Length: 134
Image (cartoon, rainbow, N blue to C red):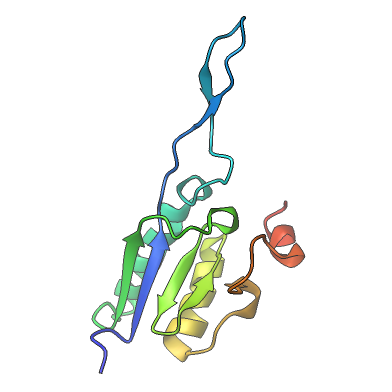
């Protein structure tokens, strides 16, 4: 038997700013963000903190563990989280998305298809982009 019913790893990685090419007028500098993006700049900490607080509020912190993780290497799809033992990858964008993952997947064992990432997915699906206003 597993120690936890579910173990959630929430990426909270912050990538450094990307360097700008030096030119003869401005010199070198940095631009905000990274070319691949990072979960921290996409409110990953807020979403993880919400999930952790809700699990505690629901009295489930003894069997559902919410953890920060380093980079999960799916930066373009972030913010990302993965739930074990299933290995279900998610890209939630709002606290409402996180609440849906809690209620459906963590408490009732039913994945949330619209927020799931496929194993071979390298960019957000059109409906995922639309939900983010992208």
